[in-house]
Amino acid sequence: MVKNFGLAKRIDNLSKKINDPNPEEIIRIDFESFSNAERILFQKVEEIEEEFKKTGNEEILLKNAELLLKPSEVILRRITDLYCYVATTLLAGGQNKEIVDYFFKLHFYNFETDLYECLTHLRTWTDKDREEFLSELKEYGAHLFRIPRGYNEDNCKEISELKDSKYLAEKSAQNQEKEGG
Image (tube, helix red, strand yellow):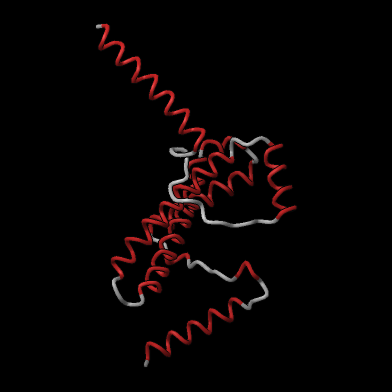
């Protein structure tokens, strides 16, 4: 009963935060929840940013570019871990959490990989391609659908045919070498 009361109280507090008129304040990350190494990293990045603000020297940013991205990686990993933990706990309903964890992570991390590939391709688009896409998105709306299983570069019809033709050409060349040699 105590657990249920505590859970109800946390849900009530979360509901109040969701109704907060200041949306950027809905989620708060406690600095103290990070490890000592992570806090040192955040402080170092803050020092670099302060030095840049004082001097305006872009060389400082270029020299520390990799380090400046690390806090975002840490926070994203923390959010991902939290999401995966909460989702699997709720989906498991107290039963077979280990099995639910496996399947959830299998699909979730495949989703992340697919999204990464999609964004990588997006970066190759021209400004015209982006404008056309956004124009069509605004005109027709975002129609969401389930992507067929296994739809990626490896089985996209055009790419598959191209790979097959290269594969067949290589095999043919190998066979000719064996026969002739």
